[in-house]
Image (cartoon, rainbow, N blue to C red; front, side, top):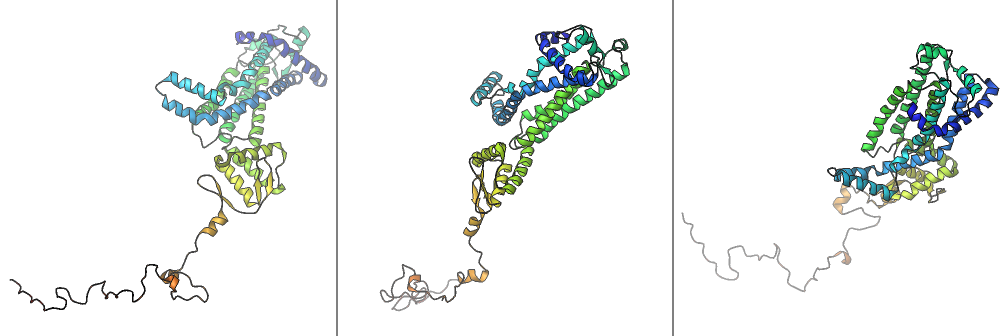
Length: 420
């Protein structure tokens, strides 16, 4: 770890300078040698870094959603070229290029934090070894070595020996209890953050290998934090626990206000949005208008939650507009056809013929008031011939009255005797 941290030594001076500036402020409030002054300085460093990384976090969200959208296409490519890995990679890169998606964009916040994390580790490790680093001079070094967080020195680790902990004026039991609790909290916050992403903010209509990978990471990351955490100084554990809590809160905010389409979080959000819009009769704020505008633009490609939202507005007498606003319209029940096109249920109901009773079907239909059942000339068949134009054919389907086997108008031939 020391070798890795030394690679980021170029940033140790800025990191140490930021910590010292915050220590000056908190030292005036809590005392320069207290754990509160140094601990809050590290927390403030995390907050400053994460605020600077907000644009990257937004880019990460967009990249993650774009990857989720591409999963069906990626799966088709994998199945089509499962025996040709090179062609499969080429088609994947072509798909990324056409859609403007970068798979590494989802890792940008973690990659951007890495230099600061290793620089902080290098600073705290130098404090534990009694070495000055960056802008931390000898007096600040002695102050940092005296700082304790709940009885554990800032530079102590879970794996330190009794002599190392005694040199920092602390007990081994206190150090291990504090570090163990912080490691558990750090791993639990990481697990909850990943689980929240998988259970609430993933499109449940798409089942792809990407979802299986995310589920695997949900368990792998907490284990990694627990394994590597025993080698982190208390100050680094404070840093990593703070950044995990920040990530969890930031993700909760995004899921609550801008969920992934097709996810359970979107269903809950659209239900809340429907109540607000129907109550006030309009969309409020740019965020709500952007959501409604995106739903209207989808047209027939809306998912079930979005169709339910549009239908709910129609029942309330509101119509979603293309610019994201809503306008009052005629109250009607709008249903969704199989092809996704909205249809008016009331009109469809009027078009259906009224069911007739058995008596009406036998008599040829219902009788209106004053209507007679006698046929008029217009009711006669068009091919009927007038009477007298031709001799009427005898009854019996045009057959003559003479019985079968008899001649017309002549002597009858005797019947031959039957042969036995």
